[in-house]
Length: 80
Image 1: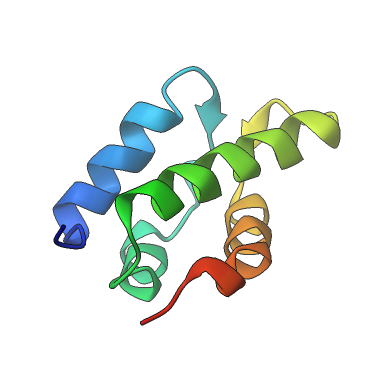
Image 2 (image 1 turned 90 degrees about the vertical axis):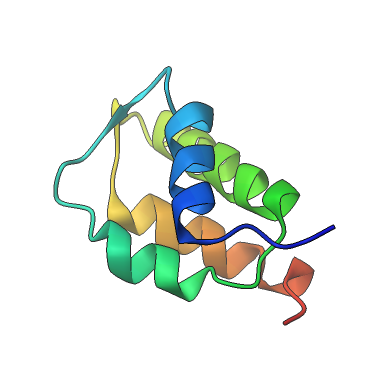
């Protein structure tokens, strides 16, 4: 199965995080670029983990730190 491209990664994040607020300060282009070569399932897992981090820290908005932390925690799943 082919890996998702930039537009597909962005759409996966948009759909997966549709039920929670997202900071407008996130540098999506830079973040998505770092995710090139990642499977769709891993993108969904990173999005869900970022949402979980936000909720567990008592925040109502996902920020770039949540996304970066989730990405770093999932590096073991990423085989480029």
